[in-house]
Image (cartoon, rainbow, N blue to C red; front, side, top):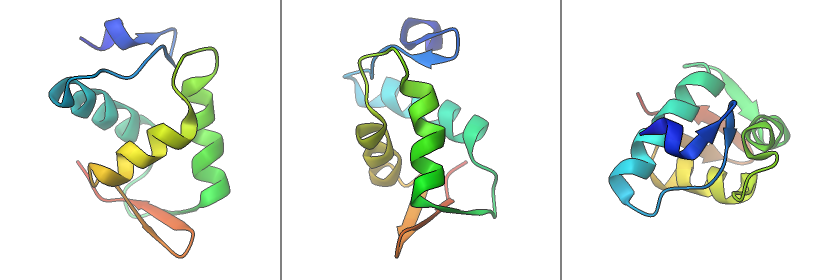
Length: 84
């Protein structure tokens, strides 16, 4: 399923179906953010931009989905991994 939305480590597009999107978001979270580490917003944006380079998705939308699905938590411009 991931191969449909990832090409050479780049996110080509986000799945419309929530279940598929969740699998993809978990994959990105596990490979991008360390549990227990806090990240400033700029570092989160830089990390997510790398996933979105050359694809149809943008890092801001990706960040929003990670927050909405509770894979990342945000407080006062600081983010940390909260999902699996």
